[in-house]
Amino acid sequence: MGLPADIGIVDTMIGFAHRDMKEAYRFITRQTRDAESKEQFAFPVEYMFKEVPGRELEGVEDPIGVTLREMDLWGVERGMIGLGDAEGLGVKALKLHPDRFVPSTSADPNEGMRGVARIIEDFESHGIRAVSVFPAGTFPQVPINDKKMYPIYAKCVELGLPVFCCAGVPGPRLKAACQHVELIDEVMFDFPELVFVTRHGCEPWTELAVKLMLKWPGLHYSTSAFAPRYYPRDVIDYANTRGADKVMYAGYFPMGLSLERIMREMPDVGFSDDVWPKFLRTNALRVLGLS
Image (tube, rainbow, N blue to C red; front, side, top):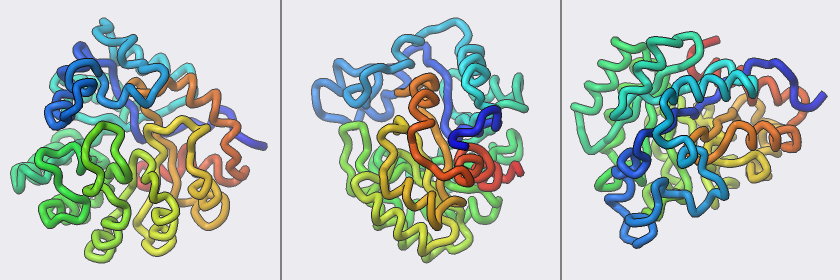
């Protein structure tokens, strides 16, 4: 059968074009030290991508409409978006199209209980379905297993929200130790009820990520920021064997990948027929509490 048609894909990482990319990513570039990141890059990881859709769309008049048109064109029924952008696009998109967008919020462990209060506020006001954290992008950096993270994890367990967390060497030229995959083991031990979804690949520790997913029921993997041709082989093999319920699709539009590139490469990934519906839709629906 291969890649099924008209399945109603759920994308667990999608966004909107910015008016000013350099300003939007200043929270990352303020930490970098190399000249390229600080002076040349509008997008902190553009050295990794041949094309950066966000650059081409920078300042577009209707960024929400652009994303919706791409979703319609490539069969994406729903996309998870962040609500914390300075331009307010996430809140506006959710208000205009609640059937197409799934809200999430980001949390900064350096904010302490103020950050936890924001999670509660976004949960009560906007019905968020997930919380995202970017350990390498916090300033100062906060490792995945740092106790500053624990109030966030505890609140997510209490509210029944999954955590989507970047793991592995970060794309921006930032230090990587805070995102080592081995740190997840302690978190899952201390929070066995937590649903924890990795973002951005877990490389070069994908074998360890698979081992930990076998170990911890709440640990999952999403494919954000990776074109399908670069999905790690051991993650594909895991999905095709014991991990069909643990691996889910996430794109990276318009940050670094177009939906066109993702969907044109997707049929060659090599998932088993029974894995495709789970990978593209049902795993995300379950994790986000939408099923």
